[in-house]
Each structure stands twice: as C-alpha cells, then as structure tokens.
Image: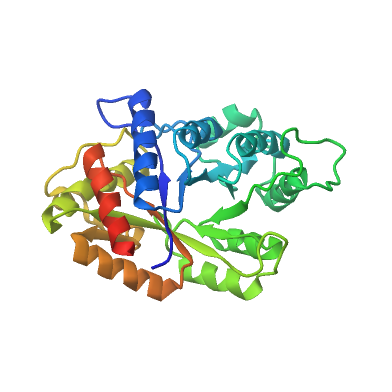
Length: 326
C-alpha cells in the first residue's frame, strides 16, 4: 500500500490535562516510528478545550527531539495568524535542529473562533485571499537566492518541504499553481474531496520542490480486535464532532455504548457526512475500507487520525493500521 502517516491533535481527555496530552503525543510518535509511519503531524488550533497543540512549532520540537527517524511537521500552521518571517524562523530553527525531518503544512483558516483570532492577530484586517502571496513570501525566506531584503536566520537556504492544506477548491488551486504537495482534510470535511483532487491534478505546474502532483488525504481509523470495540471507541470522536457543531467544544469524552442511538437525527446525518472518510471495525473491515478509499481517490499517501480516549487503545488502533499496510 501507499505510505501512511499520522495527524495528532494532542487531545486533552476529560479528567486529564495538557501535560498528560504531551506525554501521550510523544509516546504515540515513538510508537508510530517503530510501526513504520512516514510522518507525524500536529495541527494548530486555538481556544479549544480538547486540543493542546496551539503552540505547534514548540510541540513539533518536543516530538522531533524525542524521536529519531520519522518526519515531524505541521498539519498545519494557519498562516493568516502569523507573519511569514516568524514561521520561516521557527521552522528554520526546527530544520537546523533536526535536519531532513521537518515538514511545513500551511492552511488559511484561523483555527479558532473570531474572538480568538482577534486576540492572536490584534486585528482582522488581513485578507484571507492574501494567503497565496504569504505562501510565496514564506518560500522566498527559505530560498538561497531570496528577493527580500530581510533574511530569515535560521531559515535562508534550508530545505523545508512546504505543503498546502485545504478542505475546499481554493487550496487545491494554490497548491497546483505553486507546484506544491496537497493535503486535503477529508477526515472532517470530505464534501469537495474528489473535485479538489481532480482540480489539483489537472492544473498542477511542476516546481523546484515537486515534479508531479502529490495528494495526501486525511482519513479516520478506529481499529480494534473486535467490531464492537472499534465502534465503541469511535464514540469519543463522534461526541467531539457533535459538541463542536453545537457550539460547545469540550475535552475528549470517554466512549459511550450506544451513543448514536441517543442523538437527534440531524446530528446522526451530520456524522454520516463528516465520517464518510472513515474506517471503523476489526482488521478485515478496516483493510477493505482503506483499500477501497485508496482505489477511489488514487491517493499518494494517507494521513491517519484516530481520536480515541484510551491511550492504549489508540496505540493499538495505529498498530493494527500499520500492520494492514504491510
């Protein structure tokens, strides 16, 4: 099969705290390295009670320092929240510390609500359509022959692979125009996935970084030794989606037996849509779902996410998934 990677949101469980979340994240990254995963990414979110990866670059450094070979990166940095120069310096530092192992995925969403976004940036005057120009500026800071008078130190001349992240056609257009690899957030926003993939591949322009299109797709996996256990474990993530869409985000909740039978029909329909890119079940069920998804999309790589409350069960889910790839 194609390479598998991991997206970790550094979940904060109900009854736990960020410190334990960070210990679990590093333990998962080491587990992923042993299991042969390609890369381990962390995502920038702010003001979310159940997500501890707000200071994404800091946490990437923690994970890279505690592992040896797996690529570590951002999936992603929400560029409108930051100056491109600051991100170039941060990831230039990471690449200098852990050469050949750092990825930089970029998104244009704020990763927060508007109030939090204002606190991050002090004003919201920046135009979201400025995103492509910000990406180009950031790429220039990494260039050995940059055009800007200001230099990123460290950063200039370093090879930090840049990815474009997206859940709509906009990101596909940006990635194709700049000749960059494209990661689509099909694990939570699958509606435009096939359209975005087709647009990206048909309009891709080769670049110094990438000669041909490369698509990585987000995919939810809840694998366990029995079907019943896998569906039970998945209810923590199902609760998280319902709480988020209800405007009441919380820490990751323990699994609940029969949870889907307790929610309103419109939430059940929402979960069916959101989780159309998901495999829930025992080994054979998950293997069939993975193979069908790869065949449907022609993905070059899958970014697996498993929002499971019990850390041991989460490690087991990723272990089963890695074994299926072999």
